Every structure is written in structure tokens, then in C-alpha cells.
Length: 426
Image 1 (tube, rainbow, N blue to C red):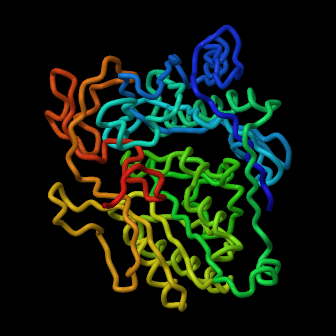
Image 2 (cartoon, rainbow, N blue to C red; image 1 turned 30 degrees about the horizontal axis):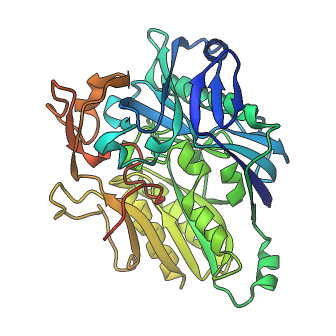
């Protein structure tokens, strides 16, 4: 599969009489977009706001972050199964509004939503503080259940990203990058001496608003399978989960998965990037055994020499992570796992809920229990009253002066387990 991504840089975002991209500025017609979103009968009201890098703005409670993209050529359309018909994506050309984002806010599950600060101490911990963002504040119709509200909010975000992405359909990108996956046999012929490397992408799928969707299908209803890495870049996988803000994979993360991009950059040089396998994270032991067994069998079937495994979430999914690692290693395949840590505020507690000697190559996204102090912001988009209840906060985290003392896990994307974050070791 071969996909071209054409990047159109966005350096500012404004409301205007016509939605368009002009001179690297994204203009949004507030009335037109609001009317589009209000077509959903479950939505009572829509408020649109803007947040730019460096502004004294706090966005909370954050549900999802989405990058605007549009299919220019190739089969299917962006976000298949939601905005487009269920056709295989990942080929042709897709244009990207690079530097822009759609952020959805709304109290779905108050204790597992997050904060994005556009400046100050909090901005240092999230990559999303660097994006020119259109924020949706969606209020549901009275009496709407949480799962229905989550779906309405998710669809509103995807529709908005599609609406904005279409503005770039006929623009000339400043940069075009090409990503191509060879067939298994062609890869062996072209790179016979290079190690064969695959990627296992674990998807949050524990249910009860801990869901991820693949071509519109809830991942907990699937078995591990192969998917083209470029399909990921075209929106085949979208987030529908409300797990802790610091290590959830937003839809933006899936579209910009750095493990996939780094493997592509080394393909044909230091390794042969064979492919991407997706697997789910389950609640019950029997389901964990089934999925990890199938994942290990897929890796062996492809004749891989090495595998990178990335986790999403923590606690219960730590068992899925270690099962995948242990069983793939038992096939004679070397693994590297990417996770984050909940090692206590002093960093002295056990980092993962599960462990095994086979997990001897680990990359960490950081300690989510680290305590941080956030200054007050001039403006809050959304609702600030949830801060004391967000995972990582506690009674009294939000001070009367608007400052916040909490654990790092309140920040959206702070310890992301794909490595799409700002922390590093020194």
C-alpha cells in the first residue's frame, strides 16, 4: 500500500465569514459549522471557541483531539465507518492541515477526562499546546445516557475534522511525504539481509466508554489482525475511550503514530518494516489469553525477528502487555515494549501492575503520578469544576485563585505510550 501525505501548514486560526485556508490561516464560519453539528438530534447546543499556542487558555474536560485531513485520491474517505463509507483506505493522497486540531470537550466520565493548557507549566507536558485548535463545547439533550453522549461528541469531532479537512482538498501542499508497505514476499526479495520487524498496536477496548473503533467496529468485538500502517494514517482507527488523560491514544495520536513513522523512516535502511498488527485489551482472563495467543501466532507466521509493542492505559491492560511480550518472546522473537509508569508520587512504587523476565527491553513515557503545579489561566474553555475529580486530581486540587496542584495524569497526552509526548530522560 502506498500513501502520499500532503502537508498544509496552519499557523493561525480565526473565525470568519467564510471557511477557508488562506495564507496559512484557517478561517472557520461559526454559524455554518454549528448548523452542521446541530443536525444531530442528540445535541442540545454547540459552542465553538479558539485556542492558540502561547495563549493564557485552559481547556477542560478534554475528550478527544483530532487532526483535520481529507482524501484527495485513492479509495475510500477519511474516517471510514463514520464520515465515509466502509472502504479500505491507506492509498492515494491525503492532505493534512498540519498545526491544526479539533478538540472536543464535555463531561462524559468526569474522572477520566483531561486538561490542555496552551501556555505555562502545563503546556510543557502536552504536544497539543502547540496546535491551533478549534474547541467544541457540546451539550447533550436532557436525559441522554453517557454512552449516547460519548457517541454524539465523538461524531461531532470527526465531522468537524472532515469539514475543516475538505478546505485543503484543492490546495498545493508545502511538503509531500510518501509511505509504502511492500508485500511480505517483495520485502524478503528486496531486503534479504535486513531484520524483519513488526509493530503490535494495543487498542483500549475494555468497554464502558473504554473503546476504540476500527473501520467503525468496536475493537473488543475483534480478534488480532493485520492492518496496513497507511490505513492508520487515513483514519481507519478512531478513539472512543475515556481512559486517563495522560496515556489515552486520541484520534490525533492514531493519525500521527510515531512508532509507524519511525519504522517507515528506517525501512530499507536498518530494518524491513513488515507490517502492523492490532490487538485489543480485554477485561477477562480468557479473552486476554485468546488475543495474546493470536498476536504471538501472527508474529511467528510473518517470520519476524523483532516486534515493538505499545500499550494504551494502565493497570488491567498491563497484563495484556506482558502476555503479548512473553508469548512473542517465547516464539524466539525479540520485543521492545512501550508503556508508562504509575510509580507513586515519589517514584518508588512498582511501575506496572504485571511483570515478567521476558520484558527486558522497555521504553517508558514517564511517571503519571508525578505532582505538578499549574498556574491560573486568563480564560477557561469548557468547565473548570471537574478538576478535583479528574484522575490525578483530589479534593482541593483546584485552588480558589485558579491554580491547580495535581498529578501529571490530568494532562492530556503527557505520558502517551506511543511516545507522542514531550518528556525525555537525562
